[in-house]
Image 1 (cartoon, rainbow, N blue to C red):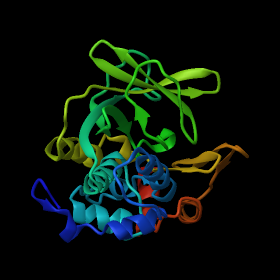
Image 2 (image 1 turned 180 degrees about the vertical axis):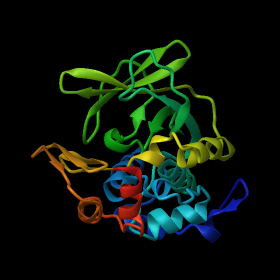
Image 3 (image 1 turned 90 degrees about the vertical axis):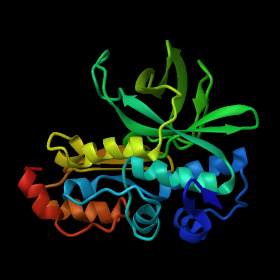
Image 4 (image 1 turned 30 degrees about the vertical axis):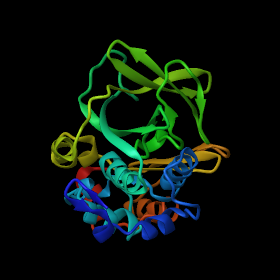
Length: 274
């Protein structure tokens, strides 16, 4: 299958991806398949920013994504996750478009952030769905139908989408409150667009991805999220734990998040005062 200039049959091992996430169903472009993949992907492949923290390049070409997220016990951030997921869905016959969002999560109300997050639009059977397997601690574990005001449960939180002028806003229900996650429009974005912001996020001296250690992963019944030396377990058996050394953080990344940690983590954390 040729997509753009990419021969997916020649360079993308769908079978390896399915084994990585534990998918054993029939790979057809149906809503059931989309929902299953959207849950299994973030359960198996963690969100993490170790390469940008360590000063290593973050590459978005298909071969690099397959080697890192599929062939190795590594994860990535939104551009890596959602670019890979876009290739998977396209190879299966879904109609997929890349979108970009302005993050609102954990920022003051009214603050306008740059379009630094990637998500996906999927057209299927006369309906439009939003998919996003790469938003860290509040990553969707199911696609959402693009319609305003409807509460949409997922295997984890309940979400809803609201229209706001020319934008859509994604909100998550946390306890009894609704919190804005990000806002986006439906303008198509291509790899060339993502490459620019990916380079900024992975290299700029003021980027959070360069200056902090992050890892996140949904699990059945909850979520795990690591920020520097603090591990938060949400949902069932919620807890918080602080680690006293980078060596302990390395062990948590390996044991809790399933990451093969590259060399240099301890030195990078000490150098950055984490």
